Length: 251
Image (cartoon, rainbow, N blue to C red; front, side):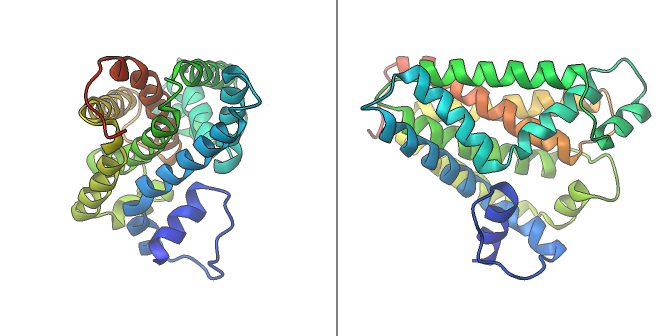
């Protein structure tokens, strides 16, 4: 139970009943529950969207969901994306890129990257099928958080200290398997189309990780946040054409 609460406390700004210091092994093992927490975040914004449906147009509701996602997560992953854009797109050495990832200042690549992602996310949300929006939000939330677990386990880290090292050191293969099962459960309502969503999430994670490794020797906490954001918007984009295929679904 504590693992769920640790994951909830780390990934969201939802108040946690934990009132004690979190041990390093607990941080790594909490990754089992990342997809579940992601599904919860998706469900909460989906319910907000559903509640606003009678009174607001889909464009306004989609904007509200984009804002709610940032509030619920404390813009944690968006901050990682911005730092990653500044570092990976800079015309400099790998060593300097790692320094930029540590720098709290925001550069032009960060601004452009964040603006592009938020606009793309808004457009993807507007395009979602009206009768499957809640399902899409849950799937995007779960698969994007699973992507971080997969990246931590399967790709090298840049440093032997820090948050990424803490996660990597205590994450086991069985933890990844359990997290993958939770992520798979989140797409069951989409039926056979859910398999394509899982493939899309995996492919985007691999592309982002491989691109990063071409720029720096390993992944960092900021990179994991960027992967989460890219996969979340990628799944949201993929959901609309996949649902249009007319494959059987649970709902």
